[in-house]
Amino acid sequence: MIYLVTAGSGFIGSYVVRDLVMQGHDVVCFQRSGITPLLQELVPPEKLGNVKIAKGNIKDFESLSSAIKQYEIKNIIHLAASMQPESEDNVPQAIQTTVVGTNNVLEAARTLNLNRVVWGGSNTCLGQLGKIVGSNVLDDKIDAYAPPDFYAATKGLCDFMIKHYIKKYGMDIIALRLPRTYGPGKYSGGGIAFTDFIKNVALGNPVTITGADTSWGYLYVEDASEVLIKAAQVRSTVTKVFNPYDGRYHSGWELAEIIHEINPEVKVTIEPGKGKYDFPSLDLTPCARELGFTARYPLKEGVRAFVNAFRKKNNLPPL
Image (cartoon, rainbow, N blue to C red; front, top):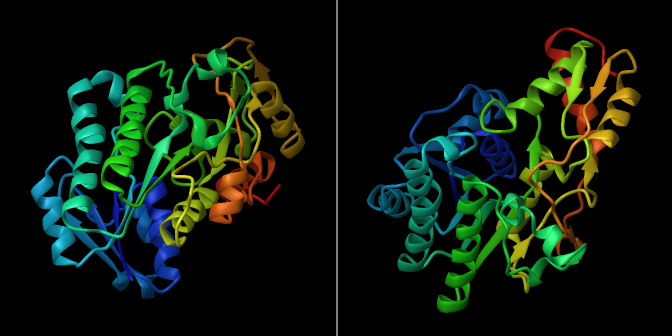
């Protein structure tokens, strides 16, 4: 089978492409650039021939639809989006890339009769929803959003737009609201600060955790790739919007405890405070029941793997 992955040589996309070609599939990466160092690092040389680059801009419907026709695509994993802090700094660009780009994918899928679209969204669209609805909210019952910034707002609009296309046109679309996704290769967007944080932990440098009273959901990139591919390959689902994470929200205080356990030599400074997000608790049952997905990397294991990836690159023993 041939899959088209938008932003296929980006952070998450590179892992998705690697795992698809390792399964024996061909992949077309639709993006503005060629093969990136991360994609080249992850995909074995003997498998790079299974990866094609269709250069184009997600904002351009014609170039997207042309690539779909050229490679006879029937399944798309859509990951292209404007990241933080660019979304705040350049609102027109964020609208064009995230919102118009996602609509282009949906329209192409509708008009060209594609089988399945999987969208890599973000749980940031829920924002302050935890304060509004309380702690127990089911995955498929959330139709309210409380985005605290423009990035989250674009993700919320795409989330709503996908539900519209499912309801109005009966399209087979699965949306995944990914939480803070981290791991080797994350060098862009808002998550780069967490990458620098983990690098310092790996090297034994002092670190500071700000806003420690805010709790986050985390997803290690290996798990993110797995759940995206499962969503692309599952026969059908009753639930259309899933919230994959390890089942818990972790505060900065908990993260500090994990860091101390992994590398006791690191000095951790903790600054209390609440951030702009307050996520509701979410039911993970649909992920396990319908997608067959359970995170293999709870936060401690994911952080340890990330730390050891940096240590390996610096010729240090694993922790």
